[in-house]
Image 1: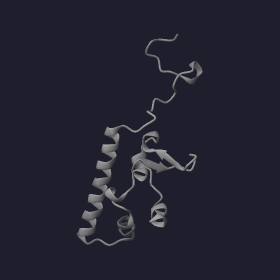
Image 2 (image 1 turned 90 degrees about the vertical axis):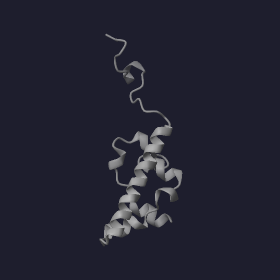
Image 3 (image 1 turned 90 degrees about the horizontal axis):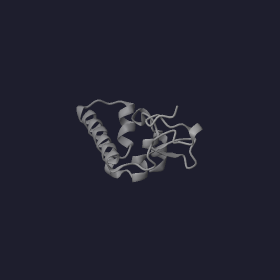
Amino acid sequence: MLGAFRASSVNFSGLLWKTPWKLSVTRKANARARLKKVDAVIEAVRTSGVRCKALDLALELPKEHEMPAKDKYTIFSRHEKGYRKGIHKVPKWTRVGYPVFFYLNRY
């Protein structure tokens, strides 16, 4: 029936998704570290002398230290009220592409 370790369900007025409402300090630090690694890769490709359109677009994007916190910890979602969703609410958010035109038209 209803065991002590049974997963909660909406039918029993429990929590369906156990995601925190706020991003933890550790997850924020990991996100910043990941963005810094991306910046390092872009810089390494730039110094190697390779030229392509994707690299030109990547160089136009702001670096981690230039980005506001809103852009670091939220991601575009057309279904949300303010078109932003916390990165901890999106499954596999590192694979989700961010609309480049949003950055290029914004700055």
